[in-house]
Structures are given as C-alpha cells and as structure tokens.
Image: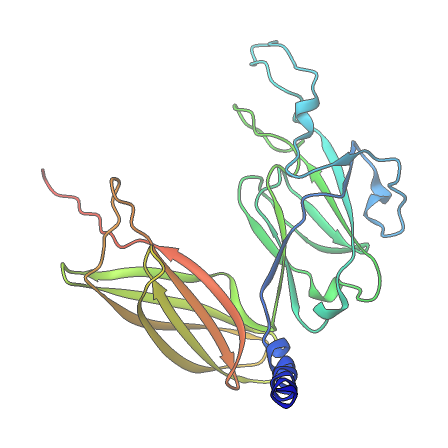
Length: 298
C-alpha cells in the first residue's frame, strides 16, 4: 500500500512541470487602489511622484458626480461639471512569474483623450472617450519592483450636447498571456451558410507571435451549445513569423443548429486553444449566435 502511494505521488510530481508550462491567460480587473487628483498636475506622470495625499477612488469613477450642479444659463442646459482635467495613479505589484509573457492593459472607456504612463514613461494615448482601446505595456513593466500606472484625462476639448461623463468611467483590465496568443478581440465569427439541418461557422482568428523566432502554430476550435455540450471541433495549423500577426481561418459545421432570435436567443461558445510545438500556450473564448437578416419588398 505504501509503495502504491509512493508511486502515485511520484507520478503526480512528474506531471507538475508539464502542468505549469501550459500558459494560462490571466485577466485581472484593476478596480481598487487608485488615487485621483482633479486639475493640472504636470509632475504626476513620474514614478517617484508622491500621491499619498490624494483621495482613494474605485473604478469606474466619474469626477463630475461630486458636483456642484451647474444650473441652466446662457441658453445651455444644466449639467454636472464634467469639463476639466484630472490624474489617476495606481501602484501595482506584478508577480515575477509574469516575466517573459506579454502584458496588455485593456481600457473599456475613459472620458476623454487619455494619456497613459507606466513607470514614468509614455505608454500610449487615445483620442476619443467612447471607444475601448488597449496597449501592449510589456516593455514598460519593471519586474522585481513596484510599478506605477498614471493616466491623465482631459475633457476640455471634448464637446457634447448631452452629459458625457468625466474620468475613467469603465473598467480597466490587465491581461497576461503567452507571447504566442490570440490577439485582443482576436476572433471574427460569421455563419455564411444556414440551412435547417446544418450551419457553416466561419472562424477567423488573429494570432500574435511576439517571440523572436518563427513558430508553427496549431489552433484547435471546440464549439459548445448553450448547455455545454460539444457540437463540433476542428484543427488548423500555419506558420507565424517572429514579431508578426497572422489571420488563420477555418470553417466548422454545426448539425441541426439552433438559431438565435429575439424570443429564443440561443448562443454557442467557441473555445480556441493555441498550440506551439504540441504544447498549449493560450486559450480564448468567443460567444456567437446563428442568425441571418433579410430585407424584402414586404
């Protein structure tokens, strides 16, 4: 009995390196621990800047909610004081285990014209307030040390007849992935042929190879229905050059498809596994419905 236990334990230990080598896509929502300052503050982008006296805020955050309300005047409608500028800062400890991977920041919405600094260095900017955007911040990260994100937000040049908000009004996520991965918003799914007994599902996947060498990449697509049953699957492989992206397309067929409509919004899920050298390095999930739209004279 003891010998069997020892053999089982030894077999388990031998599998640990293999389990750890499979890169997990890690998504962290950066909701808490932000500092905020309303107004001009030019040195606030610096890593060493002292923000200890700034008030704490939680995202999403709209600085205009604090008021005071601006009453109707000069023919304009009353509104909250959204026009101005402000700074957000967050001190972030990134695990050493993330080193060697690719790190993105995904911003769901910042009003408006945000400029993003990582450890005092400009990482990128965006020129609109209503669209989501993302930045590859890998080269700005300092492993084995604290990292500081600073974001300058400026609504003074934005104009709107409605209330547009002010500040980081939607969530920010940090996404850590293997250097070989499905790109952000990396799948495009269509259903070009829909019949009563089958439907073709066209999956276009943008694969990003951030490594220094070319790679032979294999994609495995597994489609599940709304009750988590597998309905079809397929594999496709191609070569992706170093530091390049490649669009990989394939078509799968779902038998007896359940269509999406308003009364019965049936959905399917595609799980895309990315392999390099027969080792899984990323997993990406997409949701879609099977439907078509027709415009007729009637």
